[in-house]
Length: 262
Length: 182
Image (cartoon, rainbow over all chains, first blue to last red; front, side):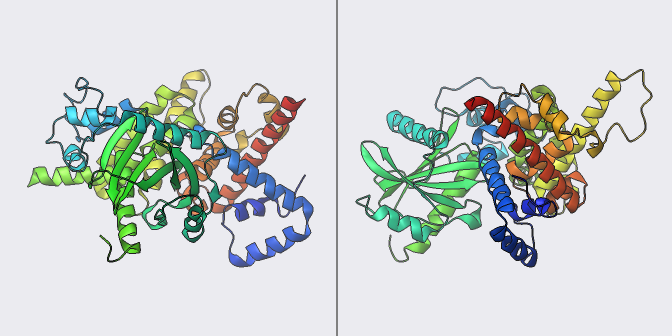
């Protein structure tokens, strides 16, 4: 259906939150009374949902990143093509590791990156869960950015209460939550977004390293840590730096929610 | 001390600029439709950005970087056109521009998209000015103002390009869906 000619472009402004309050109100009032414009707007929303598919996003090849790092002097250009040192590290980390520990980026990164005991089965499950969440319509059971809605939603479904912090201020807005099965038990999966990337955070009562430990598997990055009796696993295709920023922001927010608790 | 300063600058560059590598690559890739050219363009853009980094005074590093990428894409497209049209005398300034004039009518465009198998192909088939605007808005979620800064177009033009890009895409997608269910 075709929108009113004088409103057609404004609908895009409304969709993109680019109209000032007065114009937005006026247009919304019009839409409420005009089926054609209402349908046009819902078609735009449908298109937006279509364009949100992660598969439409390009990720820069690892080799390109390597060349740029060499260009800007972040790694030793002669050695950044160092041979693989086993499958423990992601290509990225392997490259940085191979370039020598003295390198600035490696030094800053490796301080927080400790290879953790591999629990390959669990890792595989978590990555599979992440991938599955991106493919099907199963990203969210409770789609809301309001953590006050997400937290009670879990109450009837889990025998523990996961912390559900909002991290929009750190660049990771909460998208909602989902129930997932990991290691034979239902666990809370919280979904955050970072730019165009989706980040799944699994939380359950369990063990883990105090300092976030980093691992890569099948092109995804995993980070795990323990905080207040809860095991946290974050899975995403965002970079190691962003994963660390996420873990830091989350730990800060959890600490702020539970003042006084260890 | 000098070594420390260099290391610090490099680290700042990575924190502020290199984190937008995927955005830069996505823009170059979608605009060139050529993975190899996209890599060259992005690598060169980062070199330029790194060289100019001392002059970067805060603000939106992503918009700054994407402006450089976009300029590289334009140079690349112009060089390609020059090679393709060596016989023709090029009009100064015209070759390097991403112009609305090149936009086909919706009908002509739709007819040309007959074979587009998926959404990505459809997006990559959009006229360049629409494609880059749509990409910056939908993939990078940039504001009209930032898109205007990167593309050098007025904000009103950004909105009308977005409107046309979405209308073309929506029409093509509708037609595709209709074809599939038939």
